[in-house]
Length: 328
Image 1 (tube, helix red, strand yellow):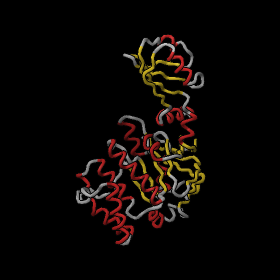
Image 2 (spheres, one colour):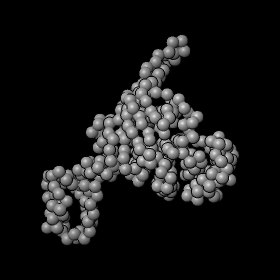
Image 3 (cartoon, helix red, strand yellow):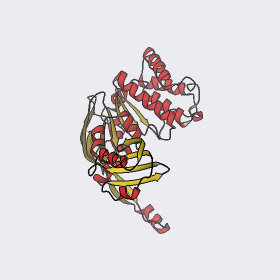
Image 4 (cartoon, one colour):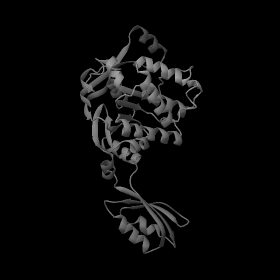
């Protein structure tokens, strides 16, 4: 169980104006300003839950993760994970958590991956039999057989990220923090990582907190999202319900025979024709003004419909609408 209550955190940042004179002045007397990263955030995450933690750059996502990992100490507020306060019981706390930062590495650069795994086993004091069992499972699920003897510096980004995820799970943590775990990965690697995370959650009950700007990751892995902006939790909701809430506009792709009068459609309230050429059209519908069936009936009166598909709002479009709604 993860319980966060009224966490606040600010940072003191030195500032100066541009120019050589101002640079010299800054050597003698620095000016500082305080950045409020978190302003009293609260939430609760149950054991075995997978949660997407989203928000724009600078919203406070990474600061929250670092506090929950015990890296940072908050100015005020409470955080309890698996019955421990992360920054007060850091040594015991890290035994129960795994962390993957997409732009940081916990693997040693010039040695084979297996050596990094062995060192992590010693750091976390994992019994040899448990380590072998976990390593065999991770190697099979993440397809690491050909990578274990390769130095980290010789791995591609996708290969390294698979090894990073394995490294974070060597000690079988109860909670897994993933900060941009698929950044820069190709489509095949992304799918492999997503499938592994779902498998781990399903089989081991690992709690997963995922922060990313890739909404396909959020949509594929989580059912619940926390939206943070300006250091505050603005929304805590179910992905499916949020998509329905923001699915006002629908896209209708139609293939037809005959002549489609785009002027007639464009003059109809609630319809926008985005594309029209060679017997195909893309129509955007405002479902508050017209239903899909009404548009299909209208189309069928003027053309012979060969094929039609209807799409609701995508995860990316939903997040854009959320950002607009909360002005972040």
